[in-house]
Length: 433
Image 1 (cartoon, rainbow, N blue to C red):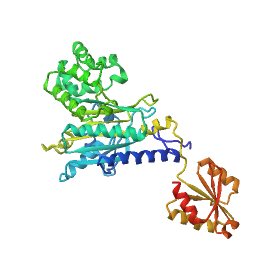
Image 2: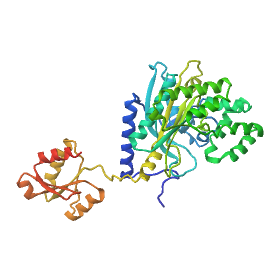
Image 3: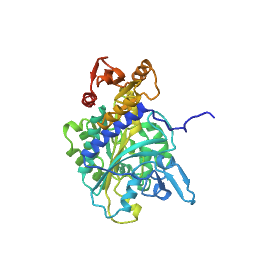
Image 4: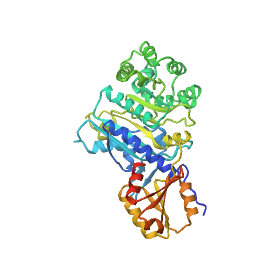
């Protein structure tokens, strides 16, 4: 049998997994600074949740790419294609939760879609969401959090923003029937990928007239600052829903500092392909990278929970999702030095295995990450092993060292060696963590 992974999934060797773990730690740090608490939901969901009318929408790529199957009870279930629906289902099942509720979640999601650099069929998302708050301050907080994540990761990145109500206002301005609005928005979402000509053809196939298409597309090529784009749209869009969307975006910008606004771009054609978005939407991109996919995306989805419940009670929600895999690809392309092991020190016994074992336990009790030669290799092979993994320190323990109550510590970068007591060794290694 030829061994290979399923298409669109990957193994992660230690150097990749260590990088991902560091990335998760940094994201968690930012999320918790903003007051978000951890949550975990299952990777499988009932079919009716994944395909609810309150969800992505039947025309969305995510819906078409969902892995579905039956369990042994002949129930229809599927692998989640994102974390948002599971979060909404959780909120709906816990109606007595104190609001607003802020959560973050890390977990794998699955889409049976096309594959390219930064896009896979199993990938990890890292979400932050808040439910129970309508104000524009919440949307501004999401933007501020994203910008802080970029800073924490050392990425030259920016976030694009728009508002679904603005898009619906433009659609109304173009004279297109509101019953086609959601379908038209899915086509608009393809502008940056397919270009205006292909989107025009797609819209015409959906029954949108040539004059309406021309009027629609004329507003997606605005130039200038965020304020100038907003001003241009305000002079044209006069219908209620469009005006409301423009006000919400202006409110968001009013919370941001001049420094933050440098990395926030109002993109009128930003649509997000999922059908549940109701207001402000966001997508983040890295500048000058081979990875052209967005590294994060999200928005406001105020109707999802109430529609899942079939209730009139309001559950305003907004949030954003970071793609762990795509961000990892970005970081690797930046040629960040790979760390191949978590081991901080490697102990080489010279006919003293049992004594070494005890020394290792003492170091571990002090919180030092330690490994030791368990296969009786020679000194040169052990040094090659430590070098190949980039282990920073090696400790030699021989009978002569033990008689003196000491061990020999070698710094693998400088080559400097010191004879130390185990107590002094612990102190030195802890200071170098």
